[in-house]
Image (cartoon, rainbow, N blue to C red; front, side):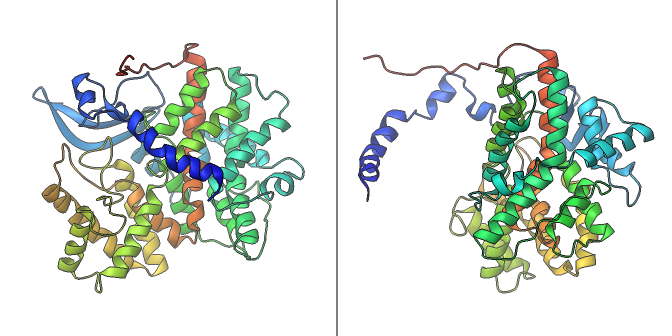
Amino acid sequence: MTQIDSYIAQKEELCRKNDSILPELYGEYGVKRGLRDQNGNGVLAGLTNISKITSFEKVNGEKTPCEGKLWYRGYRVEELLNSLGENELGYEKIAYLLLMGELPDETESETFKKLIGESRKLPTNFTRDVIMKAPGKDVMNSMTRSILTLASYDQGPIETSVSNSLRQCIRLISIFPLLAVYGYHAYNYYENMDSMFIHRPDPELSTAENLLMMLRPDKKFTATEAKVLDTALILHMEHGGGNNSTFTTRVVTSAGSDTYSTIAAAMSSLKGPKHGGANIKVIEMMDDIRAHVENTADREALSHYLSKIINKETFDRKGLVYGMGHAVYSLSDPRERVFKQYVEQLAKEKGRENELQLYKDVEELAPELIAKYRRIYKGVSPNVDFYSGFVYDMLGIPRELYTPMFAVARIVGWSAHRVEELVCTDKIIRPAYLSVMEEK
């Protein structure tokens, strides 16, 4: 043990003692922990035109849980997806909608897709000098370092005008897939001692197609694979503005910071397992279930093991059935409802219906068991992360890229909120904390 390790070991308890706040004080002073009450209602911190979430409605004057609804710029997300052709990939079209506030016509849509494709390039030697230098398993950290370094290649890195910020955001939307995939390949080569291949993006391909092409040695993918990944990206693009990383985006923007620093801060928020890492925990939980339940088709045995998970007797002993429940939604997550049909389609193509059945059984059993063992204030239903990890696994996407895939989608929402914050207000977001310090 080094000298500093020894010192820290002695001082940890001192910090725990002097930094502890009695939980009952939050109720006494009416302070909402995590800025949300026990029903999941958040403290209003601003107004937005970008998206909207509904999980309750008024029935006879009473607030009543309802099926979850999600709108992008006034359009229901289900309707946006249904408006796309059977094999049409809509990431770029919906990105335009979130950024500009209106759906593009066919000409504008093609122009924007072409712009994204032509902008999908990194500065000369950037892959070698930045991404492949000091690679690590945490691809989110690698991406964040790359984002901050990109500012050095920008002619106006710290100018915060709307036009300059919009230009920078479009650039980042275009190259996020490269930062994610190349970051993984560097880690896989240097840390896993595996083969190295760096495919250049194809400007004629969509974001989803480029992701699959750049990930695979043979560059090949099916139309179903591209459609499912494209749908996943659209469903993860934006979520109401009240999530941790989007709030981070608006907070840092309000301080007058530049686009690169703002998006790097959002990345640091998203990488937290309580935010962007949920789908990995679902996969790990399912691995654990398969390892301990001899026959997962035996619903009684499955129910018994899920009870042990909920009662903190097994798995990570945190008592959570990952992928079940949401801070906002009660009866259902609209993203999960939409996504499930694509999951079933892909599972059939991959011959993995048996694994899908386990997910469906957990989806059915978990709410009953959680209600049995927990005091809950609203409904419990699967969220979009319940199935997204399974989809990424079927697509052959390594787990190190699960959260970066979320970032490739959410960069669109972050960009929209940054621009809206710049347009709407010049006030810095400065929340208050009530001091319960004892004067000495």
